[in-house]
Image 1 (spheres, helix red, strand yellow):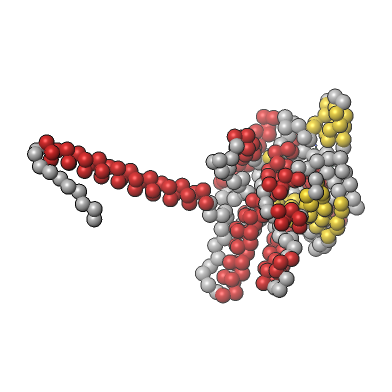
Image 2 (cartoon, protein in one colour; image 1 turned 90 degrees about the vertical axis):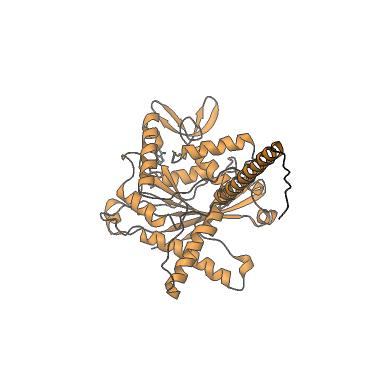
Length: 365
Ligand code: GDP
């Protein structure tokens, strides 16, 4: 298993990813320091992972990539290839690490192909845990995997057994975001059908994928609408391209076919923009869920193993403060309603006694 870190700066300065808006989400200190984010991409080879990542971050993350032939693939196990790129937009720095998993699903028997991936995720948690308990706590580099794009083939009839097993094995360790690859190979109707099938299978198998958080009630209507569309659009059906093509006088990122151009950033053609908005808008939330749910799972599991305490049961999502609030509110509302009923009863009794000529006085107890 090879693990390699390379660092690039963004060569394609003309494009715009959109993370310059990140300071709206976090404290100024983080703006000065820059953001650290790790994205993992998993899926069978040839599904367009590298192309999509390059399209997302307008950079070439794999300049020296060499693709093994079928004979080499037979003996090869899954390797882990981490590339770090520093992108700067309007003075905001993002240190992005993309972890690729070449060889995933390539073997004849894929039973253990996600073990190296689990090991990598756990190793990053372990490193963070040690750094956190060390002396240099202020300068910890956070290499934990914050999000995992899981690529689903557009040609199947839903999830394959390997997809189900992978997501079940990983959903308590990382924020899994399933995406339908190469969606330009499907008609709009086929995309809708495949999305519905995947959603129902995810539910049937009890898989917990990343859940976009609800908006606060005081958020503006446009943002609420955007959030609703993101939630309804999952799993996103995406396509990528490394080519710029001229369409009606505009240079667009697209795929040129004899019958026309598929524009990657056109929301009528695919969900690429939605995927990117989700990643940028909820980058901080993805980091928080990693810290509060997945890292906590790792620590609890470690404690349970070393201390022989209660058997470990992983959390699949964070305790939702919205749910807790509404539960509290519900109890308060019930109490208020009960009080009102009692006051009304008392008023009625007073009225009746008055009519009968008696006098009632109420006492504070
Ligand atoms: P990876 O092995 O998953 O990283 O896949 P690559 O990004 O190397 O892409 C494999 C092949 O699929 C290449 O020939 C790409 O040009 C092509 N490809 C990449 N993205 C798309 C896409 O969105 N749609 C279609 N139709 N082909 C794509």
